[in-house]
Image (cartoon, rainbow, N blue to C red; front, side):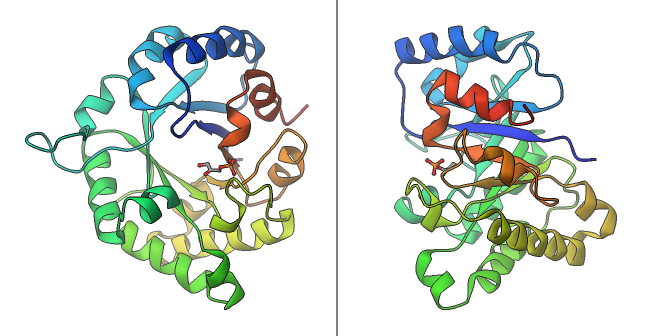
Length: 248
Ligand code: 13P
């Protein structure tokens, strides 16, 4: 059985004061959860503070991004070593990084390899646009993202995959459990082709795109959906705790 993971991607949201009131409430709400990995990915300005607030708790942290160089003149960027000071995970390949910041498969691949080399765990994101799905190309697009993004990666032991169809992100238009399951199984089978059966069965594949308290359970019930990467609905402590506790 794969252990579920529910991860919050706060994106560019929350000041220090807002993060403090979230964590004050959230810690208590999920204190008794022992059978789900809980991850918060705040903006990097909040990682240090949240590290202190979540030490010796059941909450892990992720950075939303990192750069692939070790150090130097890269204004505005943070390195894998810097992330490692505070977080266990880093999100790489999010569609917003691909779309708004021009991150290519090649850049994403460099980041994945650097993060793993430095001992970080990676939440590796992929997903198709509305147009690509309408043209029936979603599987081709996803297969390419997997092949290119994970090129040169020896082991997926420290990788979690997130399938986030772009048409479902922040739109309120969730993929139906059946559509998500179909793609998750496809992703698992693509991973099987490259990394073998054992890795494919072990790797966790999260669904992201308008996950809410009301739809989390039916998505997580699907055999190849091993958790969620939650944007908007992760900003509210009560709502996100409900998603973490999807098993009831
Ligand atoms: P929403 O949950 O707001 O649709 O965002 C999903 C997402 O992009 C998580 O990384």
